[in-house]
Amino acid sequence: MKRALVLSLICVLGLGFSSMAASLTGFWDTDVTINPQAVNFNDALSLTSKLSVTYTVGDWAFTSLTTLSEDGWTAQEFDVAGVLGAFTLDSTLKFVPYDAVLGPSFTSWNTVAAVSIAGVSFSADFTLDSTGTSLDLMASGTAGDVTVTGTLTLGSGDGCDFDFSEVVIGVGFPFCCVDVASEIAFDCDGFEYVQFKTTGIAIPMIPWLTLDATLKFTVQTKTLTLSPKVDFGDFACIDLDIDLDYIGTGPISVQGFTISGLSLTCDIGAVTFTAVTDYDGGLGPTGYKNYWEYYKIATKDDGCCGPFSFDLGVYFMDGGVALFDVGLIDANMSLQIASQFTFNMGLMINVDTGAFTQWTVGFLVTW
Image 1 (cartoon, helix red, strand yellow):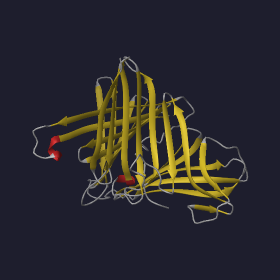
Image 2 (image 1 turned 60 degrees about the vertical axis):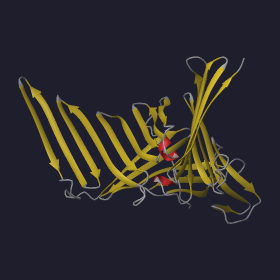
Image 3 (image 1 turned 120 degrees about the vertical axis):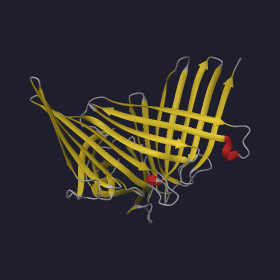
Image 4 (image 1 turned 30 degrees about the vertical axis):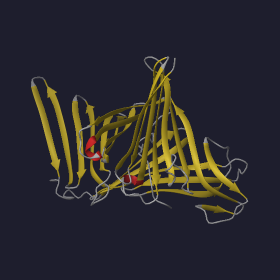
């Protein structure tokens, strides 16, 4: 299977533990500075941009924080926080999206768990980074005027020196119209992979054939594996790109037809989430057609003075050099400030080359 990604927005791949109402929120904070006295163009323009997307379901929040500059995609962070029974959990995963010498790399993973039992508070703080691993176990409690605290530290941070070898965490959750089984793995060298799998994707008019889909990310690659299986069921919200009466060498070749891609669209509150895969590599905005998959979030709402719309698309290419094979980031917004005045802005980052490709600011005045 070809390589490429998800900001994940995987970043936006909503994990959840219940069927409670979900919401998709976030912010995009961008400052562009233009220096008209600069000698060359590279010095004339500077960009600082942070994009945060949070998917909340039940007592859990899953956040992706992306940092951009005029040099491209400079930092990526994923965070999950919530309640599991009596425990509170907070886990943060950080990456370097691109390095001219080393390429994309894992930076650190930190997880903190806490619980209070019979007036005594317990917590565990696990850290894995390029220097090694460490685990701090802490307990504290109060009896009258006496306060007792204790901390046990395992590992010096210099390699796997408390016999840590590997950890694999599995989570099942609903997302849009499917049930997803996820798995994330770490070893002594850091992040190994994160995987999402769903089964029983039904094909309309062919009730005996279903598909299992497995989406797997490593630091430098992304694969989407589709496995056909004979089954019965109704067509859900996932649309498949099917060419009938075609026999060839596609990603999935079945006698009589070829499945060359799939798409999913669903509304999460006021936000629309879209995911599209095309193995022919025909995706991308005008002039950028060499991408085989993209994820997009879009919203339309009332602003302070009029309609507001925003969309963010993340495109993945085969053989990209950035984290998860992200190739292109395309964002657009429009705000009607008054009935006669509309402001719009667009931002495009070519992540694969590390270039700040295009920034557009415009307005429309009517009278």
